[in-house]
Image 1 (cartoon, one colour):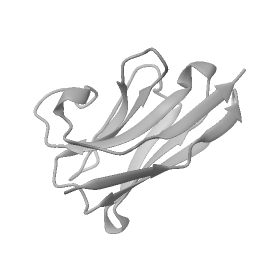
Image 2: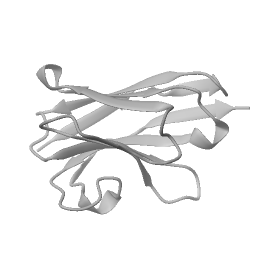
Image 3: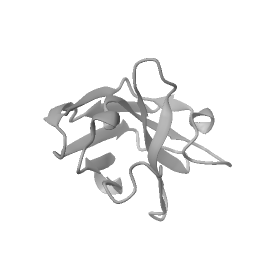
Length: 123
């Protein structure tokens, strides 16, 4: 059973940066691992995803150029570097892994989820 634990969330002002970390134990057996976020009253949506073999990355249009997803296979770690944060980036951020055939920014294909870490961006 894959266990995912997120950390690194917090409260920042607009324009600031945060780095989220996800520890996967054991390292995911799927082909994708990604970050999702959910704001109050909204559905959970994809932020960024990366293939577990070669590092092919996918980003939501709203974060392109500001967020960077990366991973360290040797350490079983997934990262999300978030720069130029905006108030609309506020939400609970979840790490997820799974074996997918479709769009890696959709939640339906992921089998394993962490508990989330809160990110709050104030204006």
